[in-house]
Length: 213
Length: 213
DNA sequence: AATATTTGACTGACCGGTCGGTCACTAAAT
DNA sequence: ATTTAGTGACCGACCGGTCAGTCAAATATT
Picture 1 (cartoon, each protein chain N blue to C red):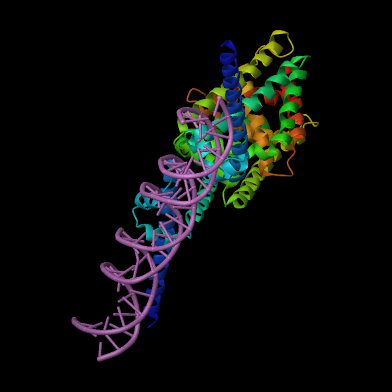
Picture 2: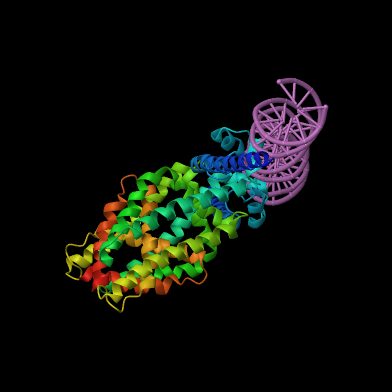
């Protein structure tokens, strides 16, 4: 008897694991296609093909194309956010050094993310005007807020240990810096010849001098 | 006899003026609707209604919805670019002062542009994946390039007159700064509570200290 | 055998673009 | 002055393609 229920629960667990795996498989397939064709240029059928499943199956896992798109968004945020957090926590050294290392890590991630970067623009656009506007807008607000918070904490540390001037407004610098990183990647997206890494590094030299006074 | 032809050409000129005016009227109507609903959420019929004309008429002026959208893009670029150029050329004073004034002017324009800002995101998205990708991408590349150029010239002036350190990389700082302004407006778009003007000002204090060494 | 899962052909709402026709206005003819 | 003919701006009903989402049948699982 216990055997049965054990087997049952094992299988249940297995199935649910399978379901979850398949769900991420679909999300990853969708990310590829959305990145290539944009939201409205993407056919649900194409995603199904990319994921190697039937179109109907897709609707077992997601209620609508928009739902799936939002799932891709969450997947992307988690993926990139995790990366940033790792590179911060792994870092030692002075606040300046950590700021520089973070910059390098973020700009470097450009290379791996290049073909997914157009997703970011789709997300922005979705937050601007689609049905899903509010969902996206809120997520972005929170995302930027979190990131600002991490960076401003780093700067505040620098102030506290006397490395940076005490009259520096950590929040403002953090907000601007987060934006700068974002926008450098954006410019790199538009211009093959633009090198976000060296640009960011040289800029950081100047900024850090301004922080240290 | 000459009277006739004169009258004819006057009328022709009048009509063409009317045509041009109407074209801008349509573009402005389209800008509103695209900003509200996004590119693919917008019905050509809605634009026609907003412009107070029939749908068929719209196609007398533009070949396709995409053409019209690109016209809106050009209109927007011209509108905002003109503003920036004015505020730069009108400025006197030291390089720092001009940099600060430019910052203020740009962040201030946020207020007037707020309800058109979602257009920017639509443009980004168009440059990422629509049919029109290349058109948009190129225009953005050029636009950012021009702006970087203006700002880096300003910084180089500062270096030359000894106000900024000679080892500052003007190009990199300009690229980052252009990006920062952009991204601050983006964050303001996502977050009502975010004040791009004060954030930018406080940030500029730090940055200019870094430039001046 | 019963149940769960997968599938892709099908449907109908949707919408960009077209087209035949109207109207206001001009210009030559009478 | 009046008629006639020509022009092109304007219109919106319509067409035809498209595609998200459905569902009955097929297949796999227990």
